Length: 99
Image (tube, rainbow, N blue to C red; front, side, top):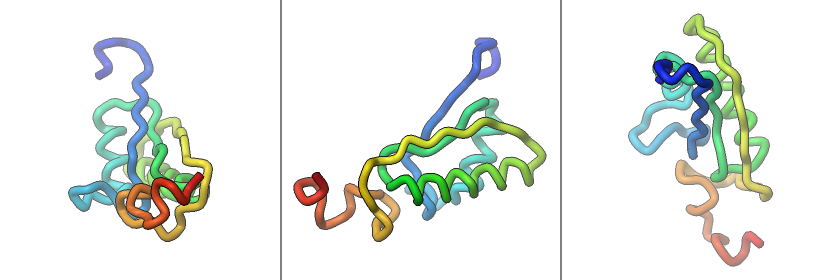
């Protein structure tokens, strides 16, 4: 990635339970940082509180691994505290009851 000499940014549809292959959010963050990402974050499947909490865990893991990154969050606009691994799309209210 670094051959381009421009900042690399990646935002994942991932929440506190990790990815679909049971990789923790901490491990995902460390892998992305090791791959050369300058900005890492989470997006669009979880509410602001869940996204911020997930990003904090990512930040702590990257720092513990001795690396630094910038972080971003792009949450959805409604509450998803009871969502499972796939986020709001797994809620019984989705899609019609969420608007």
